Structures are given as C-alpha cells and as structure tokens.
Image (tube, rainbow over all chains, first blue to last red):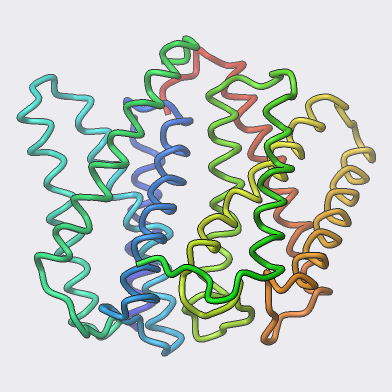
Length: 156
Length: 168
C-alpha cells in the first residue's frame, strides 16, 4: 500500500509540475534532472554500498519506494525550488529558498528510515543535512554554469 | 571512500583504453550546439547509471557486478566516461547521415548490434560480471535505450528550433 500511495503522490506532483508554467527552459530541467541523478547516485553508492552507513531494504516494495524517490521525487523537489529562485533577485532570499529543499529532503530521508526503507548503521540527521546541502548546492552551481551557456546561445 | 582495485588487471586496462580511444571524439568537428552536447553527455552517463542502480548495484535483483567487487570502486566511476563517446557518436552520426523512414530502424539496429558487441568485449574483459543477466537480454535493452536516446535528441532539436516556445 505504501508503494502505491507514494507512486500516486509522485506521479501527481509530476503532472502538477508539467502543467504549471515555469521560468526554466526545458533544457535546464533535463540538465538538472540528469545531474541530480548523477550526484544522488554517486553519494548514495559511497554512503550505502561502500560505507554501509545507510542500507536500503531488500524487500521489493521498499526497494521500489526508494527507487521511485531518487528517480522522480528528489529531482522534482529540487528543480521546483531552483525554478522558484528565478523569481527572486536577493541573494539571501535565494539561499533561504535553496535551504527549503535541503530541509525537506532531510525530512523525507528520515521518513524513509521511519517506514523502514532504509536501515541506519552509522547515520544521523547532520549527515543527512550535509549530504543534501552538498547535492543541492553543487547542482545549483552546475545549473548556473549551464544557464550561462544557454544565454550565450540565445535560448533564454 | 572510492576503493582502488586490489589487482590492476584486464578490466581496469580495458576501461583506460576505452577512455583514451573515446578522447578522439574531441577531434571531430562540432556539429551540435554546446547546450545539446552537454545534455547528450549527461544522458549517456545517466542511462547506464540508472540501470546499474536499478538492476545491478544494490538491488534485490543484483543481476551483474561491475569490475572486481560489489563495492563502488574508482574504476566504476571512470566507467561512466566510457559511455560518453558511445552516446555522442550515436547522435553525431545520426545528425550527419540524416536517416529517414526505414533507415532509422536500420540505424538503431546497427547501433544495437555494435553496443551488444561492445558489451560482449566488456564481459570478456570482466568489466561486467553477470550474475543472472544474459547477453541476449541486452539486445532488447539497447533497442529501447537507443530509441529513447534518439527520441530525446529529436525533442531537443524541436525545442531548439522553436525558440519562441521557451516557456515550459
């Protein structure tokens, strides 16, 4: 039941994201989606596969909840808030907006620990916070670089 | 955090040689805009990574192992670079040859056969160690992957040509 609820929520959020007007170009969305995958997977493989600090459940439904999260939910959340940063000009406000997905992703990671998708071996909230700060801010820096390329080509 | 290989053998050499050979794409004249090239490079790295995560790395399925151990090694990370020339050349030649109608299907089939052949070499060199996966499964996987890849490129081109439709 958990899996189907989570699938429904994720797909509904995806539909909402697709139908609402955005400030980003489609290329930026694709770029961010891929780069977020790259970073979340690399970080997860180091933390989960190599260090075993955070182990993902091998129960198929729990495993697919985890898969759905990194494929759909996490990138969607980050891209939504990145798009929101284009609305504001103040750098402090931008920082504040970027910290919202960090907090939400940390919260969801803990929620997933609570519903036993992850098993903790050597993990705490500060690790989670650092992990998401790293992913969100590095992706933000790459996105800014890519945005400049698009501006140079006259696409935005 | 990223372990080095315990034995520097054929799989590590194979990855290094593939990366060096892949550097020749830098010599090719530019045909694609930078914005599209970046996305092609990222997609070339993302698709295998996503598939590795879903069916190989940590899953309950664990159908194949990459390089020597189940750990995420430095050469597993470097393997991502091997896929870039593959994806780039697939799009580059498509753009160069402009296949139409049935030629598109033939083009996809040729790349599928090439990809399976390349995977066969990687298996022989122990870059991939099957634990339930079979080479024959790769035919359909590459057929879907390459079709997705070319469709993605077509979508990018469509958006590039319709600059006025920038609002997503």
